[in-house]
Length: 242
Image 1 (cartoon, one colour):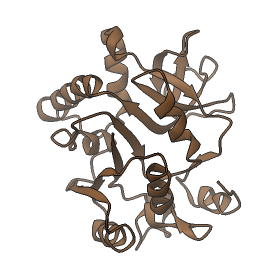
Image 2 (tube, helix red, strand yellow; image 1 turned 90 degrees about the vertical axis):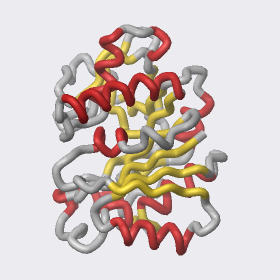
Image 3 (cartoon, helix red, strand yellow; image 1 turned 90 degrees about the horizontal axis):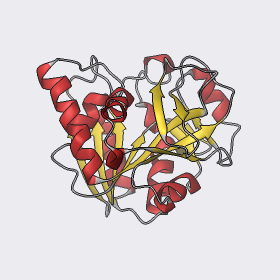
Image 4 (tube, helix red, strand yellow; image 1 turned 135 degrees about the horizontal axis):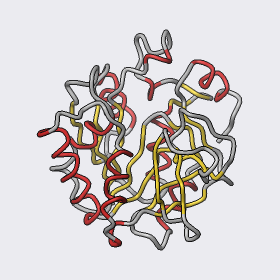
C-alpha cells in the first residue's frame, strides 16, 4: 500500500498564516498537520509515501528529512501550483503508483481510526465520509444508494439529497487508478483542464458505469475530523484534540 499526500497549494484563504509557511506545516496543538498525518498513516502499517509539493516545497522536504529520515518517500514537484488544482497534482503521480493506494489531502486534522476503517473496508475503492446533514456549498458532498455506493460526488450537488461530506481521504485499487489516470491524462494533456478538483474525474468514472470501479462511502462520522481552509478553521482546530 502506498500513501499519496497532496501538498502543493498556496492556501490563500489562510493568509497571513501561510505567507511564509505551507499549510501542512501549521502547528495545531504542538504538532503540524503533516506530522500528524504521517504518524496516522504509519500507525496503520503504511511506510511508502509519495508527496506532491509546490509552494514552499523545500520547507516540506526539509521537515520530512529531519523528522522522518528513515521513511520511504518520493517527492514530485508541481511547477504550476499557482494555477492548477489537486487533479493535476494527482495526475503527476501516475508513473509512481504501483499498488493499492491511500490518497490524502494535506490539510486535514483527523483521527487515525479513519484510515483504519478504510483499510478494513470490504470495498477496494472507498472514501471516508462524514455522514451529516450540516452541509454547505463549499463541501465535497456525496449522494449514495442504499448500499452506500456513491452515485454523485462534488460541491454542486443537492445538499438535501447528500448523505454527508467526503473529507479528502480515499482508498483505491490499481485497477481503479488505471482508469482514473486515463481520464486525468485526457483532460490535462488534450483538453487543458488543469484547474479542477479530482472528484470531477471520480464522477466521470461513476458515469461510465463500470461496476468494477464503483466507489463506496465509509461512514467516519464517529471519529474526529476537520479540514483547515481558513484562519477561523485554524483557530477552531486549536481547541480540538484528535
